[in-house]
Length: 285
Image 1 (tube, helix red, strand yellow):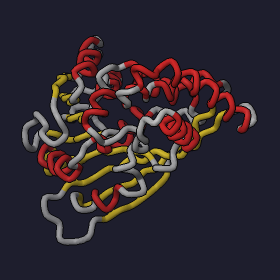
Image 2 (image 1 turned 60 degrees about the vertical axis):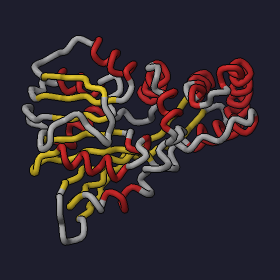
Image 3 (image 1 turned 180 degrees about the vertical axis):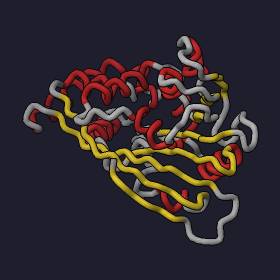
């Protein structure tokens, strides 16, 4: 639901609370108990000493997860948002991992060439205008034996919330927001990725948000208000409209909000030059 426009992205992530609300909604109301930090760790098959560049690290939850699990290698968390990095650095470090928080962009990582055993960029590449440049940068930073872990969603994920946000934008003439991750989804990612990697494992996770009352849905939608500059003046009216609209849609759904969602991970093997076609294998989690 976030536009690829850099100004909109900066507005959306200038504060950490909206992201927290979205994360907490998924944690509390997902049908399956799937810890995406744990999934990432298991897909990476970490032994403990690996050096990791976490691109778009946000408030640092993945690095903190790894430290708490006994990871001993160095983790460099990179993000463009100063607010995210301030929050990440405020959490006391656990375990033996060396964690550094650095402000930077995906297309110009402040990380040395051939430094990382893993480059991780989860649910963030759709915010990058030049995705090819970002992927080339990931390959520059990854060692020859290293890997790149990416993740995103299906364009069909959370269709009911998307439809409600579209209706909100139309009602207040705000301008339609691009669907979350629309520029990098499980439907369109592979043609881009196969140009940069020699082999890719695609891992799909099927799940759903199952929400028994309107309030969490309303709060989730409200986190997107900062994406519209006009929302500052219209916030109260928008909140009232969302309250009524979500209640109406709850009634249509029989009193239970169910939104299917699909998450996909890509475990990628970099290769500076590969003459053969990229090898792609797929499985479900």
